[in-house]
Amino acid sequence: MTNTLLKQTISMGEALSVSVTGIIVVMIILALLAVIVVLLSKAIRAVESKTRKKNAGKVDEKVLSPVVKETKKNNSLKALPETQSIGSLDLYKTDEKTAAIIMAIVSNESGIPLNRLQFNSIKLIEE
Amino acid sequence: MQIIDALVSLFQESGFAHLAWQNWVMIAISFGLLYLAIVKKYEPLLLLPIAFGMLLVNIYPDIMYDPLAIATPGGEVIDASAHWYDSGVLRLIYCGVKSSIFPCLIFLGVGAMTDFGPLLANPSSLLLGAAAQLGIYVAFLIACATNLIPGYEGFTALEAAAIAIIGGADGPTAIYLTGKLAPHLLGPIAVAAYSYMALIPLIQPPIMKLLTTEKERKIKMEQLRTVSKAEKIIFPIVVTVICVLVIPSTAPLIGMLMLGNLFKESGVTDRLSDTAQNALCNIVTIMLGVTVGATAEGKTFLAFKTVLVVVIGLIAFMFSTAGGVLFAKLMNVITKGRVNPLIGSAGVSAVPMAARVSQVEGRKYNPSNFLLMHAMGPNVAGVIGSAVAAGFLLSRFG
Image 1 (spheres, rainbow over the protein chains, first blue to last red):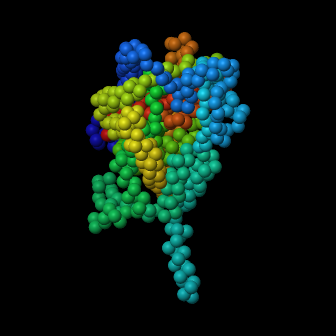
Image 2: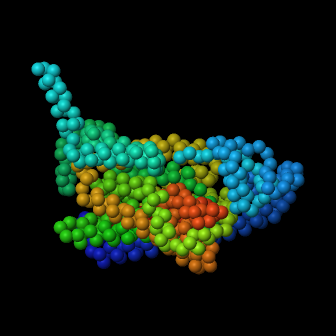
Image 3: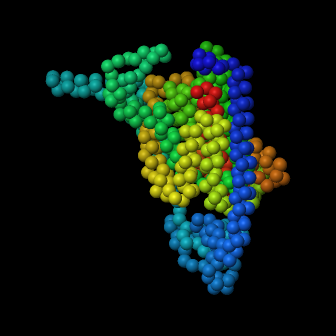
């Protein structure tokens, strides 16, 4: 396509050709990325799995999310019923009812009973 | 008498005597946008500077004065003795938009703020991010078809490509591509793109509801796996290599996006990551927002072309949403009911607004449903998808 043509309108046939090619190109590149991500993930997990087996003695400090940690250190937690959590919780612009709902949802979604979760703070993010 | 003469002279030099009706209309529109930004809190970080830039330029058009302006398409300069430093102050800052520096720096900040974890945990999200670019190509077709309107010359191929990118729902990408292909349409396209991004909670839900059944909207998705640090570090490097090798013109956008992300994920450049996602991004947002708003000067902005850009932009957004939802429905069929189609709409790249819409809509039909992290995958994939789509249009028409 010459520069002169680009300054003009193009026919619907040409436009259709550009559109179809465009969506196919985007699909192919992102599908290619998806395949590479899958392969890379498998390779990395395989390497990490081997490393873990080698270091079997070491404690796996797996962090589930930035704000929610599964507590394993405190043995006294095991005595708590599954509906109770441990420690003190700081609430910022959040009422207790909302906090309780959030804690219950996190427990339900993560599949970890409340007595094995520790919440440090719940903060309302105002936009 | 001298006092009266002075008052008359003052009035004649004031904006009241010089502004055209189009400027007054744009001033009213800027008030509306300021209201949406401050009271309704629709994307205030962007909408407020854009609206204020719009207000400034319509009260005092010389703030965007360009002494080196080209008078004819042939390149005839109005005043050969003029200097760049005689430009209006916003025109000087606008150089950052015209040279594509600002959109690229915004992408650096976006990269530093983005967590690609949900996408890595569910790589098929990338396909949703691709499908939700459908609106770009539908909008391109419609923009090209405007030459069928009787008595109207229609959009050129370059203009059509620039307008089409509104469907990517990605402000910096829209500004980047328009600055390269059709800089004279930067005002309408930027205003349309950011306005529709702000209005995503109003535009998307009816389309999502129309294209899905209640049963599909209630689908609960499995929890995503934990993604390792190594995966997160390697991802930006791989994306850069693949995308830039296949479509080299994506280098400025994808390159900066992934550099920002590598700052964040590498764990060894915390200071750079912090600067990119906070100070730098905020500074550039101010300058980009104000100067983009300042391109909406009434006499040039209020034209039939602007109306068409706004209408086509809305259609593009709607088709992008539909593309994502329909592809997610297809994935739901293939996976035998394991994908909630509502996450498809998040494939338009307005991060994180589109993902939040999926979450809110999902909870309306199943209060125990948490789609946010599932929707973040297609959402960040949409950022890559729209940058690739822009790169394709640039390689075709740039």
